[in-house]
Amino acid sequence: MYSYPYYRTGNTNGTITVTGEHTLYVDPDQAIVSIGVVTKDEELEAAQNQNQQQSTQVVQSLLNNGVSQKDIQTSTYQVFPQYNYEDGKQIFTGYEVRQVFRVTINDIEKVGTIMDDAIKSGANRVENIQFVNSNPIESYQLALTSAYQKAYQKALTLSNQSGQQLNPQPKSITEQSSPMVTPFVTTGFVKAAEESTTVQPGQIGVTAILTVEYQTR
Image (cartoon, rainbow, N blue to C red; front, side, top):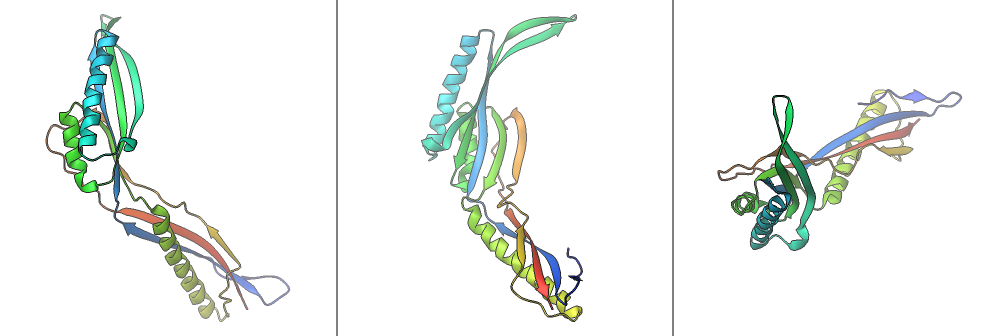
């Protein structure tokens, strides 16, 4: 969108203010998966020990599939007392222990296999899968260049239509966008699927938006 040119009082110079927007679609080259283990037992120590055992197996599965140790981080560790309600009374039934790992996978073609093997090793929760590009700044700069070119073409069209001469040197440029907005697939904190996992990463849209002000005469 853009505004019509206007003139300063007392001289023949005017300004044209336009916006330029461009979205560049790029292929992701990394996946960030939140995958975890939930265990329950009447005794807290037993629930914790079981969780630790399954989590160790999950981590080993990830390592066996080529995931680096530095790309495996515990993002959540929680303990919840469990209760049932009978006849309006709260009855304690045990403990639930949750441990969730934030895993960065650099080979997105193996995401499905890595998840399947982690589930077979003891993981039973998947929170989300997020596909990202490891070099978003470069993509954003390309989108920024195209956004500026679109803004300039708008200003040139407006100046020609209104009988003005456009100064190609912009008076001001205001960046309105952040480098990247990454889409992700959310599955909630749900039980992981038992069947083979098929993951479609799609593409990531990198959008740049500028507001540019030009002088005319």
